[in-house]
Image (cartoon, rainbow, N blue to C red; front, top):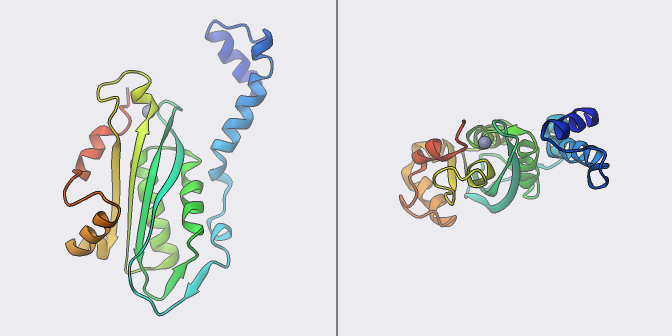
Length: 198
Ligand SMILES: [Zn+2]
């Protein structure tokens, strides 16, 4: 990978042998390996030992989880907050595991919509709750740095499964708790806001 980065620097009109760039290929490789380390993560291992059987069926919410990901169209960062909720059926998951799950899927080349679904689908599959909801709000540098229209906009995506999809009141309770407010954000709008693919 380092030779590829050297070539990339040449293609950009730079001299990869000048002092400031000498160690750049090594740093870029290390950074990219870390930022895509989610590919190598084993979900079952991440969740290992953190699923507990309980008699509890109120909504569990973990909000304001910071996440950083790379847009697969431009290899530029998009980052923001992730809010997760689920309603347990028979099992709960250790609270610290939810941010870990968000990390695992964020540290891949992503589009925000897929990242949101993957987190929700994984919780649905592994915890078998009555419902799961994930909302992600993110700034995309591929839009803001390139001066694409709506540079200050935040893209919002959501995945609502089970009770959150079927029951408007449950959904509203969640959106209220994460302060998205009733209808304040048209979640549908997200698709047109997330990373412009040009
Ligand atoms: Zn992009």
